[in-house]
Amino acid sequence: MARMARLALLVAAVAFWSFSRQATAVEGNSSMTTERVQREAQDAVETTKESTVQRKEAFQRKIQEELDEMQAQIASLRAKTDQASAEARAKVQQMIADLEKKKEAARKRLEELKSAGASAWADLQRGMTAALEDLRRSYRKALSHLP
Image (cartoon, rainbow, N blue to C red; front, side):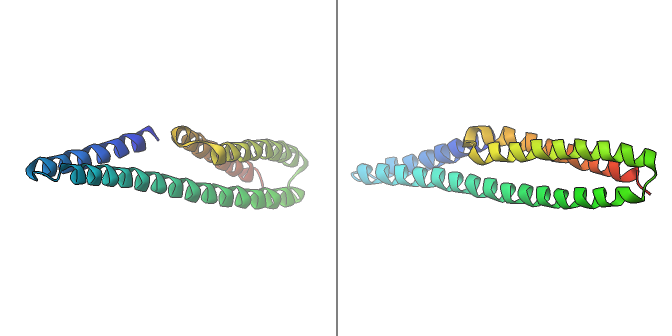
């Protein structure tokens, strides 16, 4: 998120510089040019904010879909344990319990992400991505223990 803030500041600075050059070239109309620079810089900042919000919402939807899919995969895994040997069944049931804990932790991270401000969003996004990858790895490991 810090990168987005820096980008917004850079866009605003470039816009200000560009328009301030125009303002010095146009005599007698400096108040109109200054207002225009301020308005366009504000527009650039607002556009950046809107873009960040849209990306955050899209990421949240994607994560929610992945968590829902993982819930279905865990249910399928649980159903497959009946076909496994007693030893494998016990091991996979323990892995399923671990998967449920990781899924719940990921769901809590998603809730944190939903309420996070712009500055914390990037850090939470990285943490959320790592948590989902860990959940996927654990699922594949549990699946590998079944016939």
